[in-house]
Length: 281
Picture (spheres, rainbow, N blue to C red):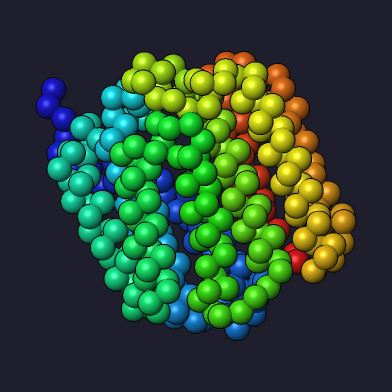
């Protein structure tokens, strides 16, 4: 049967609606609960979050566009491009979303506009080349995720230590999740010549690197909190220590594709828990 040219449900899958929702919530919660509750009705915050979501959605589309052959091996049931959305429509949506997100950023101020432009470029470069290289692709995605929270301070031209803590949390947790996803996708990536950490190091050494990242995340968050914010320790115990301990324990035992998929989903849940914890700061 010929592939369907376009379906709205396919576009929703392609742009990872729930991931976009987490990004928007992280920015809104950071502005409202960490900076000032008065920001909840600020049209600038809405436009800022909207522009970030547009850039992220464009990134998801172009990533799937370049990865169709690999995804047919790694996750054949989740391939959208060529089945529910034609390749030419995927490119069109990517271009429209990237341009719209960048333009909205410049409407807010030149700093946000420039950062949105380079973010869109980095996401294209990541999808086209960087994700097939060891670590650098993981780092770029994690950096942009952490930056999406950090930029709330740029928008309001202020400095809040708690926002920095959450930026670091988002950066390291996303870096861990990207590496775990590489372990999950090892077979397809290796087939098409990718050089991800699990391929060049092996699963065992890659796991050890993730253990170090977990330790660095916990240590850096506690240190910055002790120096600048001094939130109660039980807060970190509930929202950071316990979820990371579960992640560590599951990662030690993980050795199948399904195990690493479940770990990737748990990383996403930890990110969501982190976002929701802003309400209680």
